[in-house]
Image 1: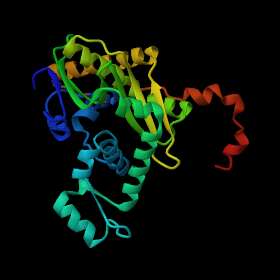
Image 2 (image 1 turned 180 degrees about the horizontal axis):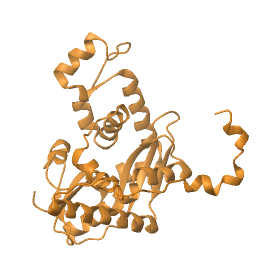
Image 3 (image 1 turned 30 degrees about the horizontal axis):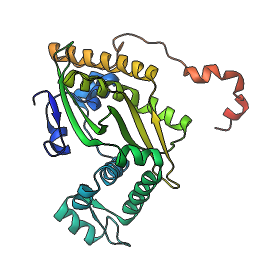
Image 4 (image 1 turned 180 degrees about the vertical axis):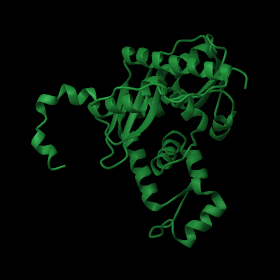
Amino acid sequence: MKPGIYTADQLSNAEYHAGPGISCTGLKKIAVSPAHFKNGDFKQTASMFTGQATHSAILEPDSFAKQYVTLPAGKDRRSAEYKSLCATHGADNVLVSADASQINAMQSAVRANPIANKWLYQEQGRNELSVYAKDPETGILVRCRFDRLLDRGFSPDLKTTTDASPRGFSNAIAKYGYAFQAAFYIDTYYWATGDVLDGFGFIAVESKAPHNVMCYRLDDESIEIGRTQYRAALNTYANCLETGVYEGYDGASEEQTIGLPHWMLDQQDEVDLSDLEEM
């Protein structure tokens, strides 16, 4: 792939994921350990399946209608009807009625939120935009795929979550490396175009009723932390390519000292040890 920007018509989601270049997902695995990247197998979970279908329904409703079929109500994945639809359309494109209802509810909730509606449907922009660039420090080909990139240079990323509240989604940003993603996307776009994006945000929609929706702009401090994180992973990946060695965790060849997590040590005065006896 040549560095540059590719629209959804030019490069499908499947072609993007099968193509060359290191992605944010790959770098996150490197950050865990190079061995995870080298030997880990990708396994799609039920939540990931629903999340991908939800993305399609909200961001590309026309494509969603063409790609997915819904199993009749009252039928489940054990039924002959399900097996027949899978044989015809592929298992990744068949929804049971409960999945379809959940996706429809999330789609309606996102449309009803004024900020999400503005970002996704009112402002000018493009969905499913693939960007390829050469990292100027290592020369490695990197890639990312924006959910949506507004013409004004702001990228709102759609996330399904169990808790869209400020506290809950802040925890999700830390747990799932969303700041890592934001910084990597911003810099990849800059390397490809020379343009600095105005910012990166999230449309967080809860996967369960009442499907609350919140819209957030990621702060600059978090983006800088994410930049440090992805930069370390990208440099590690460059070293792996050069040496051919994909090691496990740091310090594996030495004895390590370990203890309780810092959050528990910080709260030790609040812990009632009598409760532990019943656990």
